Length: 74
Image 1 (spheres, helix red, strand yellow):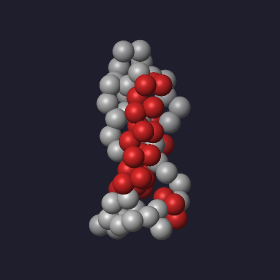
Image 2: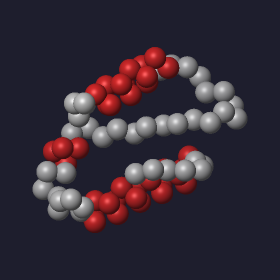
Image 3: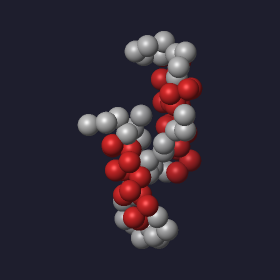
């Protein structure tokens, strides 16, 4: 499987549902996708850059608080 197959499949699902309204009380899944993460992460410590992980975790925490979400995943 190519690296972009999953992303392309997810984008096709998104475009199928794009523009629909969200029914009140129904669960919603939101996927945030970065642009040019390969460039952003080029000089980070591999395989784990703890500062980048901290920033991603904090972003997820802030989004949960802002949107009143029940769950986030990084």
